[in-house]
Image 1 (cartoon, rainbow over the protein chains, first blue to last red):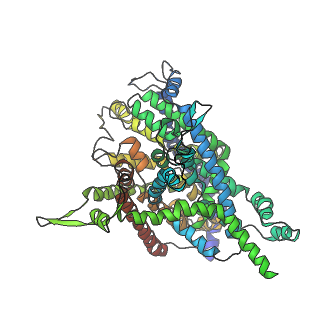
Image 2 (image 1 turned 180 degrees about the vertical axis):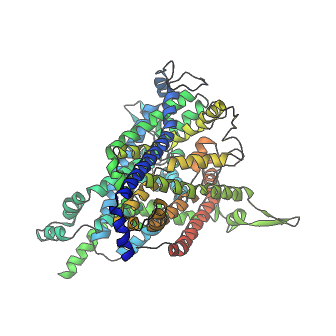
Image 3 (image 1 turned 180 degrees about the horizontal axis):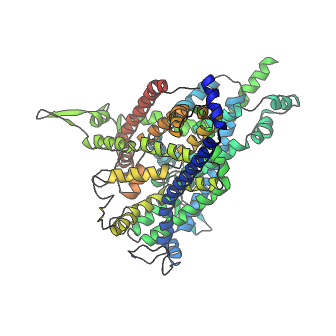
Length: 321
Length: 305
């Protein structure tokens, strides 16, 4: 104790204070420089992605600003592969998956967190246990299941090849895949609608909500669904927003599942189209970079809107550690 | 009366659970078991499946004696296991980089959130676009890296086409991608959760910045480090497909093929469904055992407050 006090007195020493000020200033300067230099190394690849996407084909030299600026690379890349359709597919799948997953997860999380019923803890344990399973394990049977659904329906129902094996067209013109099974929106969306992780995360959050409000709602004669809809959900906006952002990003980037479950070009999502595009224009870097920029921009915009939820969400997700 | 409330609650409970539970059963829990059953079959999707007992697992994991040497039945698989492990060498480096960044970015200066966003950008954009970008950076003739090296008179190699360099190159890209991402944010949260009194007390004791880091920050971040490590190892076991598929096609000569990629090839390129399922289950069990061991032994090293 006495040593601390003696050292404490040192702090009052003028000279010491001046020295430590210079020290802090130096430290801050070094810190800011490191932040800056590393930040630039982060940005350089992105910068050259944009520069190259605007350069003439085969330009070998590095230019800080492309000369001439080839804006036509973008329409060229856009037309080469049907990126427009890819956007629509990705958007549709991502929206459905995000909405569905948040909805089913929050309902299940409410049941796990607030309702008491036989078997609850066992089912919850089963959910927890599956969180470690690699997706390769479940993907193989899911692939087989979806591939054989139409044939299964043929066996079950006597008039064969009813609507489930027909091709769907919108306005008689736009191919919409099959209604069910392989190469369908159904197959792209369905397995993404449920998530043990989302359920777990929301349940952890719901557990922290005080029960007083619910008790009051119960006394007022509110149904279980009423409590879920009017009390729990409004109080969980940050957690719901977090799960929404995570699911959106995950689904937007998803690669392997849409790769194996679709066959026609019209049904491909954006990442698969970009990969396909890469196969076509293997060495035309300017077009490839234009395609990459086309793909990156929505994710960036999404992030700018949801930045706060992201940071909160990652921290929320870490609670389980 | 109490009985009816209880029944009501049970019905409500399962009602709320139902939509998720159906999906959970249909797309997660039943498929896991189906995968295990498939592991004991031979099935190419065209002819009916045949039960073959342990043959898949023997072919995958077994060794045969030839001329006095034990030769693995599936040499490729072990090479891909080695590749997967090699890629996981990037985990500690990437974690150290994230920790370093978090310490540096734990700063209240103006515009710090913009800076954090910059570091987060690769995570945001990650996916195929980033891989296409880095395939170009690593390109032998036209790539950014070799053009830069060329200015110093260095004739850079084909980073992704050289067998010895392909894996380290991908690890390097992974570190660039991940260091400012989720792990950095976790570390940042951890640092901000450390009580300020500890630093004040050590300042009074005249501790240097390094001493503060060594004796306060690092031990206090133990649980965070442990969590990130476990999650990274789990992800590492099943990782590597997307990047390799886009950038190298698993090559050169299988040098960047991981176990996950091998499962993909077996299942969706060669339609060896049973064999693919058996690899997937071996992968699952390995992840499970390693995670259990991490919990058991790693948990002792970490001190919770």
